[in-house]
Image (cartoon, rainbow, N blue to C red; front, side, top):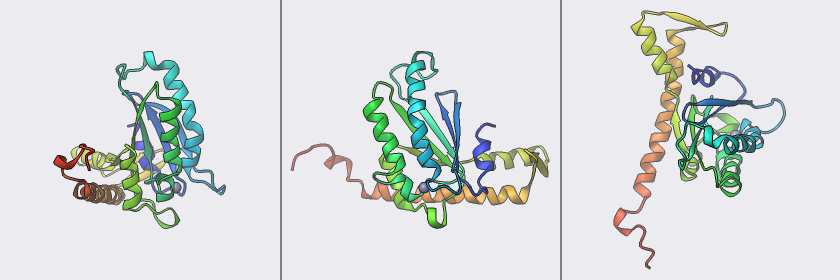
Length: 208
Ligand SMILES: [Zn+2]
């Protein structure tokens, strides 16, 4: 139930990023946007990320990820990174560039799961999702709420309490609707990318 944490906060005002690493999903940090200071949570993630890479480097032999394979780093976020945080020169771009140039001895593979789409001033559009994919980030929608709903139906549970807050099936359905929105946005981008990619026979020749 570790991954439940991020999505529980989806209705919160602040963006919160739970950072996990290695194939057994060890928690590294919980990073929260520091309101009312400027800067999205991704900015704080950027500051903190070298510490994670140092830790991975120092403990690489003891990690569960087999040697020679990139170490999975998973970000569980209550909303999708906005376009400003994911495009060229953005916080996420800088995180990846720094990891590649200064920690190329310990390659990592970044994945993100998001519980809802960023709206308003921190909007995420297809463009933002596309730049994440182009940077090699695997992005998916959270599926925690769908899983919880299945459990509720299976066990005949009408509501439950988590950290002092009560949840009923209507709320769970609302959260599932958000998960679906995220997945639909990602699907759209993936479809577009497939259509714009050159056909395999003209790829990789380098001959003009
Ligand atoms: Zn942002």
